[in-house]
Structures are given as C-alpha cells and as structure tokens.
Image: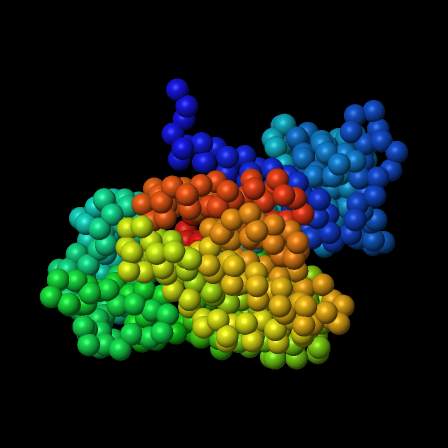
Length: 512
C-alpha cells in the first residue's frame, strides 16, 4: 500500500535536505570555517593528510585523534585526527600517526574512541538576538489544548513582577483542532500582567485583555496597512493580531537595554553551538530599523572587537536603510578584520505566512475565499528599494512565501539587474523561504536569474497539516509547494538552508 502523500512529501524533503547539505554547503566550508583552502600532501597508507600552513610561533594546544572525521573535501573525505592551532584554526587533518607527530609538550591530546566529527552547520536564516531572547519566554511549542496554554501562561505570570509584560512563542492552533485562541483563554491567569504570545510563524500574536487595553485595541481600532485585527462574535476584538498590526502592541513593550541584548547574544551563541551551528545569516531583529542597526554596531561589532563572537555571523539590516549600509561598506568594506562578522545584506518582507493566511497567493485561499493574503510592503515601494540597493551592489533578501509574492520578487530582481547591468559586483539576491511557486516558469526563473532560494524544508512538518485545506490539491503539489526537487531537476539554482528548527527554541526566526 502506498504511503500517504504527506509522508511521501516528508521523505522527499528529508532526502532533499540531506542532498543539499552535502552538495552545497560542505564544498565551501574550507573557505568559510577554515578560512584558507586546504592543500593536500602525498597521502599516507590510510587517509592522507590535509594541511593548512602553520604560522611560525603558533602553538598547537589541541589534537583530536582516533575519531571518525568527515572532512567534506572530495580529495580526502574521511580522516582520523586533526590538530588545532592556538588561534583556533585547524591546521592539519589526517591519519592519527601523522597528526600525533605534531604534538608539542603542552598539547592536550584527546582520544575520541571512534566518535564522529564533522564541520559545523551553517544556518542561512535565523534571528540571533530574538532567538536568544526567547530562551526566557513561555515556550508553547508543545501546548496541545486551551488548558495547556493557560497553564503555561499562569506559571510565567507567577514568576513575573506585577504589570510586567509576559512574552511567549510557538503556539500552533492545529495542535488543538484548528481554532484560533482568544484572549479569554488566558485572561483568568493574567489579570494584571499584559501578555503577548507569538504564533510559531511570528506572523500572528495572541494578546490578553490587559495588553489589548494598554494598546487601545478594540473593534474600532484603525488597522495598519498590511495587518489585521481578528474580530469574533459581535464584532469584538479576539486578541489576535496579524502581521503589521502586531506593532500596535509590541511598540509598548520596553526595549531591551544594551546589556540585555549582549546577554541575549551570548545565550544564543552558546545555545546554537551546542547544536553544531557555527555560522549563521542573521536576518535582524523583529523591530524598528534603528534597533537592527544598534544590534550590528553596538552588540555584534564590540563582540567582534573583543574576540568574543564565537560563531561567524553575516548580519543583515533592513532594506529601507540601504544608503546607510552602502556608506558602511564604503568605509569599512564588508567584514570585521577578524573574519567572524560580515555585513552587506538587506532584508525585507513581501508577504506573511501560510499558517496566518497572509502569504500572498494568486488565487484566494480555499478555506477563506475572502482573502488571497497580504502584500506587506507595497509593490512600487519595494521595487524601488530593490532597484536602488541593487545599483549600490548590495545583496537583497526578501521574504516571500506565497506564489504571487515569489513572482513579484523574482520580477523585481530581474528588472533591477537589467537596469543596473553596468554593476560588475555579483549581488546574488535571495528569496527567503520560496515556499509556494506559481509553476514551471517560476521554478526556472530562480536558475535563469541566479537567485538564491533560501529554503526551509522543515517548515513542511507544520504546514503539511494545513496546506491542502488552505490551498487545495493543485497548489499543494510537489511541483508548486516546497518545490525543491523540481528546482534541483531544472538545475542551476543556488540553495541555502535554514536549519532553524534544529535549534528548537529559535522559532522567532522560523518564518520571518
């Protein structure tokens, strides 16, 4: 008996994820993680040795041997041992005997007894400070009922100061049958404290009544463009805000101090290092542009100056601030001297998410024919910014989940690069998520335009339960939804992967 379609799709995506990691990431890890390309000397009888030139005067504080090492280098894919220089760079990988011959009097030698070692993972899309901050929030990823949500909120309120905002994330209505939560689910347990709970995709929040009152949200509140206030029986606000309407509440939440942001960075870095992630593309915080720039200039840069940035970070800033980024690139190029912090990329939003029915589709949603989603940034405004930033030779990354949003973004990139054909610097623009495509032409456009598809295969694990209801069978087919196999078949598409769900708590970056 054939497997159900949902399971077939899951198996396909798991295969695709593995294939993409092997085929695309590891060939560049010698540049990204080791900085210097490894050169091979004559192989030994077992596996040979790859060397990075040792700098004079550098000690070798660590040797790891008797391991099963996957190098990711086609010339020598496996090894038994490696040596680490005092500046943290791996200087040699090879057989145990060869590497142990590099031992110095003060070298720590660690026998891994055959344990597996591999290069670090690169996450192409997450929100580092936001992720670190969520480590102290209410975690609702496993809440499967109204009672569970209420209990988790009650526990957090009991630990909070009176009137302090209680934050949470990760809820998904499909876990309890599909109905959206409302403020009265949590009001009894939060009579004094305002509460804001992000849905797992960050495009929808639940407020309690205290928070709604503070924000002045009711049935008569003017809804910001690109947002929605969900109304219930009698036209009353339910506590659910969508996309751009979320700022009505978040604008009231006290901003983190610089010290708190630095603590969030440290917590985030420690957490993802434990998960094997050693390099990330940080898409910026969910907030005002100045907050994102403050993170880059007053959190990341000082950490890099002090040698405290233990992972490699490519930090993006809002597309609307492209002139400021162009000035930074002109003054300081595109990276910090120590190589751990890079900049030069810009982030924007075209639409929302499938779960919140704000992903912009060409046709209405099957389970809500009154909407086709939301264009979060007006087309003309977004296209103008793309053209200007492209002319400045800056990389652009635009969030697009719906098929219409993806078509819009691909068209913007095509137009901009044609107008700016005199710009020699490769930009390699990105589409974040590229989740739902309009058909074969859209699939081919990624390859033809050399646009990077930053895909999130693990989003399928949540969206597969709602996709057919939202979009119907045709738009949920494998050639249009999570169409990674179709892209691979066409060939020429550059992929980057978000492994955010690997990091669990980092769901604030999951679909943003």
